[in-house]
Image 1 (cartoon, each protein chain N blue to C red):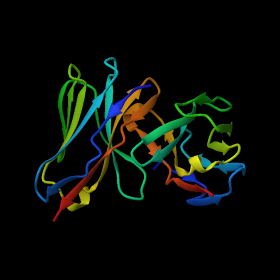
Image 2 (cartoon, one colour):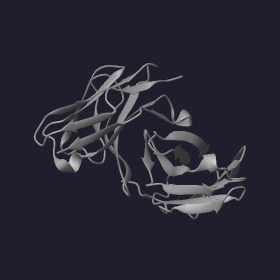
Image 3 (cartoon, rainbow over the protein chains, first blue to last red):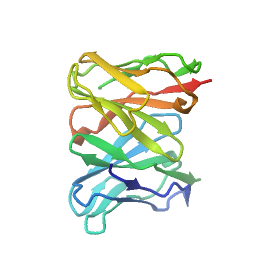
Length: 109
Length: 112
């Protein structure tokens, strides 16, 4: 079973700040990494994927991957109250995702 | 848009009852999954299926079974419900990894 670890939070940041969410994984052979966002009472939805070492930017979101350190992160620039949610890190394993337990982000106006 | 529909949003069942959770997707996806989500434990895979009549155990299959008689429908069965099966159950459908899962809205099951 693959382990995906996240700090449960909550992580509180002021509006307009950068939120940094972190994730580590146990299987050195993992190749594909994903971030899902889950609003309270809702289902998770995919927001980012990253497959190669380095950074991948999509609007206000940047995913970072360091396979040598087995570390994935998600940066949210110019955080908005609407970004308040739980962020789930996920690792793709051949035919399914393994999820971390999620980090709750609170963006304060 | 792909839609994954779970038949019930909230369910309350008694200990020992047989419980059926239904999931239907409308985009002809071959891959379907059942997870449960609990605070602090995240999403844990119960069962998944790659095709009609195919099923594979996930990480926590004990106490559960599944049925996939038609491509669009994947049912989760609690053979004899117990209080430790009180949870949020999420069904998901998958076309390919790049698009991620499409989740249903979830069924919050309470076993009393």
